[in-house]
Amino acid sequence: MAYALIPGAGGSAWYWHLVAPLLPDAIAIELPADDDSADLTTYVATVVEAVCGATDPLVLVAQSMGAFTAPLVASQVPTASIVLVNPMVPAPGESPGQWWAATGHDQVVAEFDPIEDFFHDVPASVREEAFAQGEPRQSDTPFGQPWPLDRWPDVPTRVIAGADDRLFPLEFQRRVVRSRLGLEVDVMPGGHLMALSQPEELASRILGVDGH
Image (tube, rainbow, N blue to C red; front, side, top):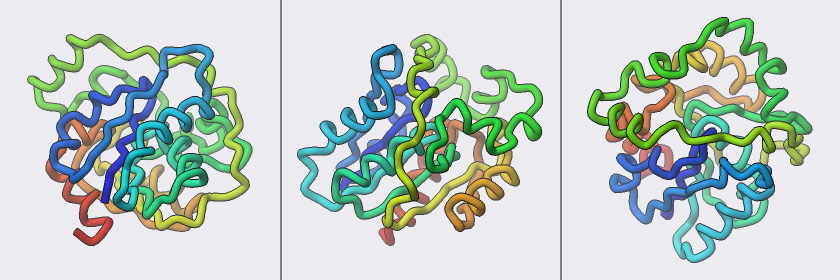
């Protein structure tokens, strides 16, 4: 298997730097998230270009907002499976900007601290490294683009959810994933940034998804 690791908002390949060495033939994708001319179509093209040399069956691993990109990639390149991690699961015609109200997220999470609630379970050394890089900029452009597929692609899909995710609480994730994909989530310890807080466990779950 070859593993394409798609980040969420901010588009940073660094997010996967602790997980990538634990997976065979891993490709951590850097998305042009700070480019105001880049939309979801651009993100898809970026991933497709990054995986074009892969000869092994491709597994798309997508974090959070990356769930809008992975199925679009799967509709363009042969894909063995999709693994979603704390995902924003899209609905046909729904933009990432509309997702929050459509899923009732604002009724579940009233207040959110992007520092403490994202990094509450990330080791101090990793947190310091992340802060030293600065917060990656995320353009608003893709948030206004409707998701163009009329249904989820016919590709085996699994969802890994963090039991301690403060942005997408577990019961919220379960409800959205059940209603939109008809799936149950694979629950593991960790918050929203499990690739930074629980890289070994997350890599194990990703590999387990595909029978390794």
